[in-house]
Image (cartoon, rainbow, N blue to C red; front, side, top):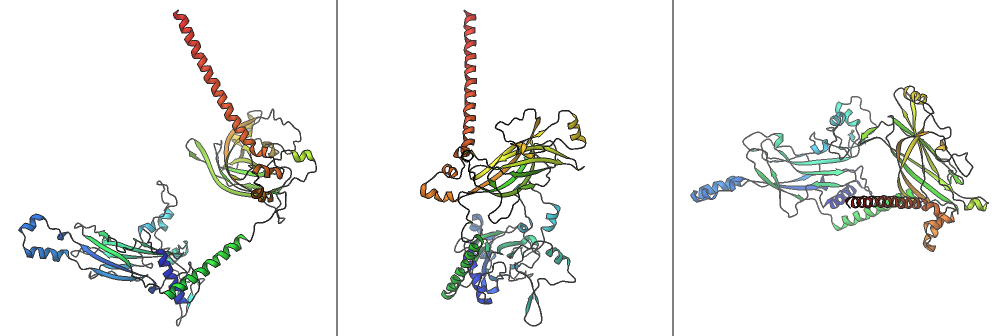
Length: 547
């Protein structure tokens, strides 16, 4: 449970840093908590079972038995105040049950040792993760090395000629910027020696790199005490409370802290404004800026394993890839090689390969007929290949995707095919020595770039259906025509019409989808009508046979 006083504690920590070091800014990553800033008070007492006397014993007992039971049940109330990272050793004579483990101790809670990468219940730790789990990685800021006098120099970039094994382990893992402190209690009985199993964590105080202090469990603040039970045979029960004992800020310190917060937020605001800029990058009029942020998610159900993809963007007429600053950009990519795994009935290769490109559309044609033609949106041509341990590569499939004609988030699945030869020799060559029929012009996957006619025929071209590729696309459009949308309340279709892109093209996919659904309903109605006619004819034949 995270304390509700976290915000108050953070304010208190920053105030002390401001007063002790004179620095007028809050540096979360190099925050060092001094002893006077945080105090936690623990009150611990035992609730013995001997104070519960049965009614039968009460009837036959005298006053001395009751007093003896009261003396045994009454345990002294132990109260102690702990400061941040205060080391209190464990008392061997058990005059005090309370002690602490600080960040420099070897004590490590099991929650810190166990670290999982996913939320899967079937996840198992690797050998490396098990060996690295118990390394001490809690640290804030850099170590300091004392020199002669009172001066301190940072230990950063200082060479240690004789490093220890623990220092090597620490320097070879990423330092987790956090500090922790445990307030413990030794609940062992007085008739035997104390063991690590008798040590109970009463409270943990943790500081992360963002300056947030977490108290687990929360301060009581008048609520019921917490209960701690021993694991021994007697099952003794203890109750304890946790209270905040730090010094409260006065009015002057609170005003100082508010001023410091305002300066910090103002600097952060200036930093974000410098990153974003004053305004968006303007574009010329009558120009559509198309930005696509995509991801090759996966490929599935191909014949061979160890797949990789080669894909590029094919630009139709009136589309350019030159940015406003004159720089060219990448329009062709090759993914890494990925082995497939079985998921249900599919063999899937996951890539999560990101890509992005930025295009510009402007129709500068003077021909009225050409300006009225439906413009084409860019195509993403995809080629799937496989490579085995003998360096034999094979073409597994071709496909393409049309960039959507409207902004939004799209999840597409493109089905692939590959060309096959006219005889079995090409398949034998593909199996034994690798290689397979390939396309000389990759744009032949959709409409060839050299095609100029009105009717495209691919009759005689032999292909075979293979797998599919899943692609995620995030499409963003920018144009000055969109700025007029609020004033004139134009729709997206009319805005695209202004740019020379017909709204018919933007809605053509919806029309085709509606046509498919209507055709399916007609086919279903025809089948139902045929079944009814068959039933009627059978019924009539049965009546005639009886007559």
